Length: 599
Image 1 (cartoon, rainbow, N blue to C red):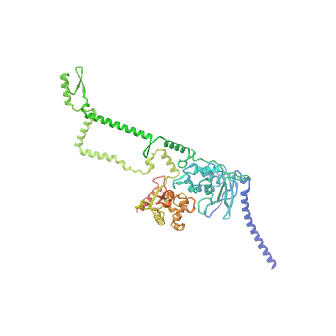
Image 2: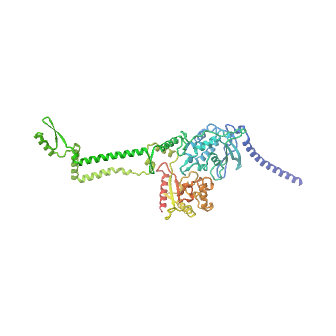
Image 3: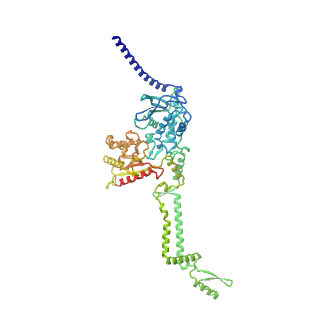
C-alpha cells in the first residue's frame, strides 16, 4: 500500500515538473526571441532580410498583426509584384510582405489618401513611409521588433523601433504641412497628425498603438533617428519629393513655398509697389488716374465740338452761302442762291425749274428704301390676315428650340468653357478621384438686441439641446426615390469610417445627446474649443478633430464661447454622372430637407 502511494506521489511530482518546464520553455522562447531581435547582428540586420513577415493573428477589434519572426526577403509572383508597384513604385525585386500584408497596407493607407490627394508630392512621401515599413526587402536594416504579444496562442508583434533619418522626416513634414483638406476647410495634419508642428510630433502620433476599435497602428511604433554601430542597423532614408517638384507639383494653396507661387507672389509684390496716388482715403494707381484724365479730356473735346457747331448753325453770321457751279455753252459760272444778274437768262430759267421740281434731293439708298417701305406698307394694309398668320408661324418656328431649353445652374458650366484646359483637368480629377461634394447647410443665430444691436451668445445648455432636437429631425428625414427610402446616412460623405462627416458643434458630443451630460455639458464645449486637435474626447464621431471656427459664427478672435450662430454643414456624396442614381438620391433627399427647414 505504501509502495503504491509512493509511486503515485512520484508520478504526480513528475507531471508537475513537466508542466513547469513547458511554461518555462515558452517564457524562455519569448525571452530568446526578444533578445534575438534586439541584440543579434549579421543576418538579422542585413540586406534582403525581413524583421517581420506574414500575419500571425488578429486583435479583438479585427486588426491583423504581423509575425515577429525574421526571414529572408522573397521574390513575389507577377500579380503581387504589379500590385506592389502600383502603390509602392520604389520597391522592386524581393519583398518582405505577403499578399495579405500588402492588402492590409493598401486598405489602411486608403483612409489617409483623401486628406493628402491635393498634393501628390506629400502623398508620395507619406506612402513611401509605410511601403518601406511593410514591404521593403531591407526591412531588417531599420526595423527592430522590441516586444511581442500572445494572440490566440501565436506570437505577434507588440512593438517595433523604426529607424528613420531626420532628413526624410523633415522632407515629409515640409511637403505636407500646408496641405489643405477642403472638406473640413483646415490643414490635413489636423486630422492625420493631430495638428503636429514638426515631424517628431507627427511620428509620435502615427506611432501610438490604437485602442480597440480605434484608428491607428495595431502595434506601437517608436521612431528613432540613429542606431548603435554594433547593431548593424541604419536609418531608412529614401528620397523625398518637394511639394514644389514639377513632376509632383502641388497647388499654391497646398505649397506656398513653390517656385511658381514665389514668382506669382513677387509679381503681386511688384504690382503693389507700383506708382499710386492717394486721393483722400482712396488710393489710385497712376495708370488708372492717367486713363481717367484722358477719358475726361476726350469727352470734353467731343462735347465742345458739338456745342461749337450747334452755335454756328444758329448764328446767321456764320452761315456760308451755298455755291453751285453751272456749265453753259462750255463756260463755267459760279452762282449763289441769290440770282446773279451776270448769268445768261436761259441759265436762270433752267435753275428755277430744277429747284421747283426737286426741292428735296434723296440719295440712291434713301430712294430705294422709301420705295420699298411704301410698297411693303401697302401690301400689309391690303393683306392683314396673311401678314399676321405668317408672323405667328415664323415666331413659333423659331421657338421650337425651347423644347430642349434647360436652365444651367452649375457654376463650372457657366464660367468655364467646355473645351478649356480647366474643364479637361476637372473632368480628369472627377473621373479618377471624386467630384466635389454637395453641401447642405443650416445656420441658426440668436436675435439681435434692439437696444444694443448685439446678438446674445448662442452657446448655452438650452440651445445645445435644441440643436440636438433639430438634428434628430434631420436624421429622421426619409425621401422617396424610385420606391426606396433615402436617409442622410445613405448619401452623406464618410471619409474615415461609417459615420457622416457632419460639421456641427454636436460632434464634440459624438452626435449623441446622451453624452451631453456625461461629458460635462457646456464646460466640455469650452474645453474642446481650446483642445479640439489634441484631446481624444473632443474628436468627432467620424474620428477626426473639428475646428470650432467651421461650426460657429459671430465671434471675435478666438472667443468661440461668445459666438452668436451655429453653422451645421452636411457634406453629401456627389457623382461623376450628373444623372446617376447617386445624384438623384441626393437631390430627392435635399428636396425633403428644404421642406423641413421651411417648416
